[in-house]
Image 1: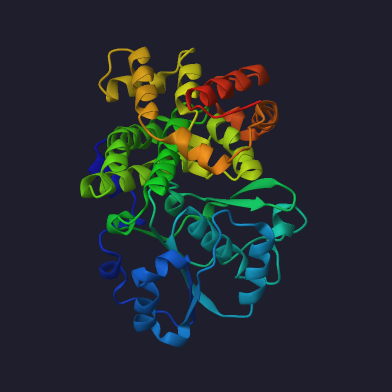
Image 2: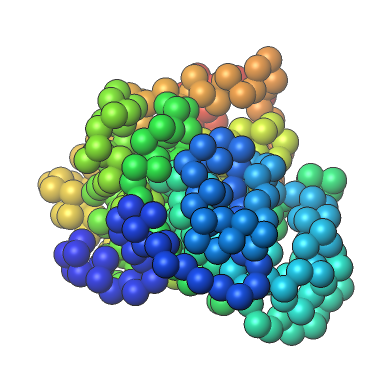
Length: 383
């Protein structure tokens, strides 16, 4: 399926300038704008107030990079009494995930329901989910097209992946110009996130011919665009291609969910504060090599799609490309003087359900070996 066919197949996605697409917006009740401080300069807040009336728009711009369950409960409580008609999310994956959570719990679930729902203490049916317009300003998570929201319980050091079919945003606006001001490290982290989604949906027991179509295109675009952006962040074509790759990869994991690389990532983020994209993407070459050890039709097709003669040749190319990116330096910057505990990370990854989606079952010992190899390649200290 050609890229234009994939674009036309998703009726929720709008590509173009966000102002043109939002022009003429009208609601009767309140609109919640979920964004970050860094994105207020874009002007969506003032634009929405001009469109809807200043008193109808409530801006929330203090969203953390890892949405915490307790903080979300406080936020839901503060907004529960309002008659909300629409939520607009402008930002990265954490902003959009927060908007998705609000869409579930601000309509029929007033009063701090998030933790109770996640922990199974509140089994009431969720009805009348609020509509969400998602405008991503990063190219990585694909949250604008997935039914997932990643939440973090920092109090208990636990990660939740909230999944609900109706949580896919009603409209996703892809305006690549919003990603053009990303600093290098954010471009790297989000780009690795998109590519890890695409690879993970291919080496996945839930992959289908249809999901792979999205993954193949995401990888083809992302492998070309990300290195260009690291060396030339002003490349308009690379920015556009990376955002499309992010959307395609998000669409793919919406069908398959993620696998081993994401299982490895969660303790790296919870215990060491490593940004999610770096944590999920740094070991992709090692996991690709591990999965190349069995017959995997989707990986064989990817070899052909990318124009390689052999699977070994593709693995070598991906490894060399990863080595050309400042992945290890970025992770070491976040670690400071801390040393990664391979055994602790391996146990978490082995026991996490996402690892069970990997097309090749990995033992605890094999996960530790994958980690040690990836850490050594990236010159990251470990014990």
